[in-house]
Length: 293
Image (cartoon, rainbow, N blue to C red; front, side, top):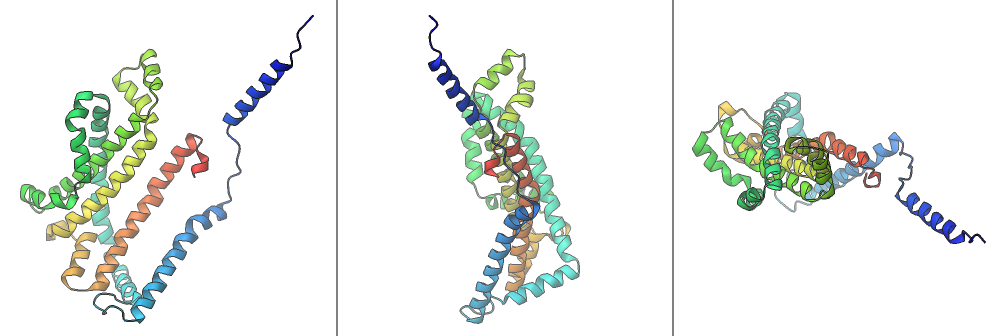
């Protein structure tokens, strides 16, 4: 007599349920206006509230005018620099230096991170050094860079590199350390040698951690550049945002100082929103992590 297949049917049902849990659930993408509202309105509201609190504190004369100017005074300073075109020169001078220094940091930090992650003796030798350099304030390198290279672009790029390379390399190391061991083994079985394995297996699998390192590397590049431009002042270097900030401090013009700070912050936010945020979303979407978006 054939046995009843009830338990088998129950096991099949359980298996189907588990498969359904693993399958991605289709989610309707929010409309453009909804995404625009969520991305645009909160920071605008926060900025408006900041200006309102600022105006209240200025009107109450809690601090002297030399320490806390009126929001209108800062806006007038910014508008004057915008209308005469100086703002674009400040931003271009600093931004192209930061971009070139960061690109050089990626070229240096990526193979360095691969070496540290995959060669045990290299990790033991320079791994702690990279971590120490990452925590060292970049401004500490500016006097040494001036003595070594003089007050020129080489000194500034040296400081930017020392700010970006450790973060980029450590980000890649962290990403590679989180790769499941089965992936490199599969690559070896399929005949992938060192360069092919690094290109087709390690870097794609470590991309989320590497991207976090790139974001931090850019932040450190930007901070290092501002520190270098604040200290290394020379007519041949032009006037970047750091030099503009130094001008305000030298002239005791607090409205110029705050305008420079807002410009530095604006560039940093713009790079995050226009470059790294789309890259991060693309990586998360490619891995099916749409709930994190």
